[in-house]
Image (cartoon, rainbow, N blue to C red; front, side):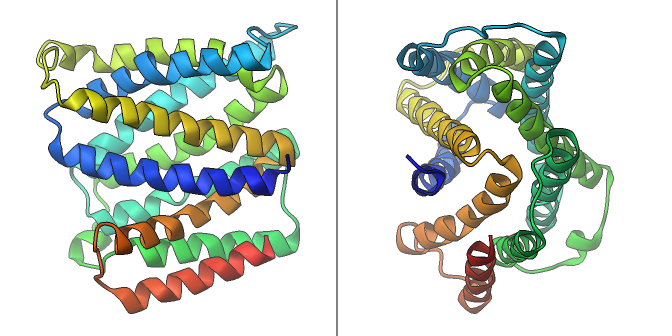
Length: 286
């Protein structure tokens, strides 16, 4: 299987995941940290074990200090990203968050080039810039005074983009030093602990929830795991996490299409079409 086919699967699953989370977030009474803990510890982690069973690779063959650090850092940074992005999204303008959030891509690419020696060619770099620009154009809803106001929560959004970019690098390092299956078992177990620590202050208030939310939580976990799994597999097959991080930015175009046809979100159509054209150009150059 080549990485392009896996990437197509990634786009489909990532789009479904984004739309499902959007709908679930509007209906749930759970605190996001608790919902994230449930979906990860009860759904994503067990699915990671299933992956490891089929891969026949439960645990790294050789354990080194570098591998342990990579797994711990990846788990910690992913957990911090969930927390930081949640807090910042509550307070800052949606347009500003969309622009700042897309900074994780160049951060991951630069870090991977330096630390993992998995960089981009000059032409692919131009493609990455167009992809990020297209994603920004599609995702923003228009500028306002709040967009230009850089508060402490804006810095928190910037920090969330930074830790996500670093998490991608650490995950790639952990998988290169072991395998996808062993990372899903060991790394996800560590992440469950970190997410439990983050969710502890909210567990008492959110211990009881409506039974109809169970299906939403399960689907959130399944789709998120599909997104994580296809990203990891594409990175391994392409042997270049910089390239995959760049190209996956194109998922915003799939989300735009699904939002247009399924959720009937048809505002700012001309601007979004311009963003689609920029992203397609960037994808072809990548």
